[in-house]
Amino acid sequence: MTGQDRACGGGTSGQDRARGGGTSGQNAGAPLRACGLVKTFGGRPAVRDVSFEVGAGETLAIVGESGSGKSTTARMLVGLLRPDRGQVLLDGDDLARLRGRALRARRRDLQMVFQDPLGSLDPAMRVGASIAEPLLLHTALDAAARRDRVADLLRRVGLRPEHADRLPRAFSGGQRQRIAIARAIACDPRVLICDEPVSALDVSTQAQILGLLAGLRETTGFGCVFISHDLAVVRLVADRIGVMRGGELVELGPAEQIYTDPRHEYTRELVAAVPSLTARRAARTPCTNPKEVDG
Ligand SMILES: Nc1ncnc2c1ncn2[C@@H]1O[C@H](COP(=O)(O)OP(=O)(O)OP(=O)(O)O)[C@@H](O)[C@H]1O
Image (cartoon, rainbow, N blue to C red; front, top):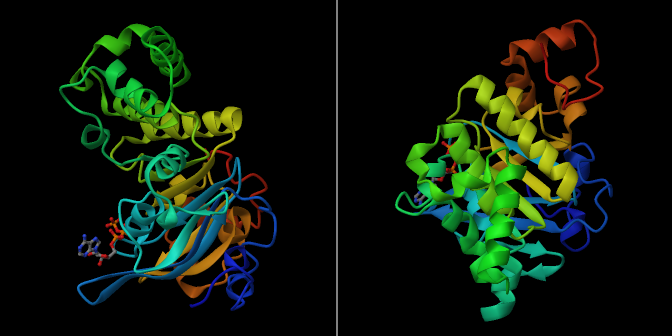
């Protein structure tokens, strides 16, 4: 599937329509737009002409099997990888064209949560200092104000202010992910990119972290790109779902439609592979609230 969606300057190919109306104007003023992103590694395409937008307070989930290009897309969104072609627009600003202070200011608005919080937290740094780092970089808060803000962030992610003095190794995997989330939201980003944020956690901890992200999104209004290989996980958080295969976004639509009426053959295969979803479809019980937890 090729082309741009209309968020990227005029709807040049009808990709929206081909995907079943996935970006049908519901996100007017969307803070984040990915426009025709392309990335090739050693001559092998990893991401082929991927376009989507994410509205304020909206969660767009991107699902697909291993190697389908999800993480490469995420890394282009936050500037860890430069696209071969295409643009990432944040409130209309093309991030590739910004430099220096202007770029740093926009980067503050686009934060990432990774699968492995140990990889994103410095093991030798107390968690309070880790959470305060972006505040030091991007705000003029003095030391006392930063301490207050860190205490508030720890509370907001379900931890206690006194946890600021501990090292990451003193925490469980779920708690470490809470710390990584606190750091990511420290400067009130416009958009949070979450790359498999619960894949390394057990099922009950997964549900807690998903609930935390949903609650934070509601109170702060950030848009969220939630990347996962697991349609059952995505069900708990997604407003819309994009399905990637072989570097292409083969389908993009409202979560309810993806689960109850998938249009692309590959999406149908993915949905069929999740037993609880298949049972719901067989029972002809439409999923009226895709964020509702099954069972
Ligand atoms: N730095 C890199 N150098 C070379 N090839 C890469 C690099 N990063 C990704 N790839 C390749 O690009 C393709 C897409 O990888 P990507 O990690 O984006 O997929 P994914 O859907 O996130 O899969 P997974 O869930 O396994 O991470 C794969 O074929 C992968 O091997």
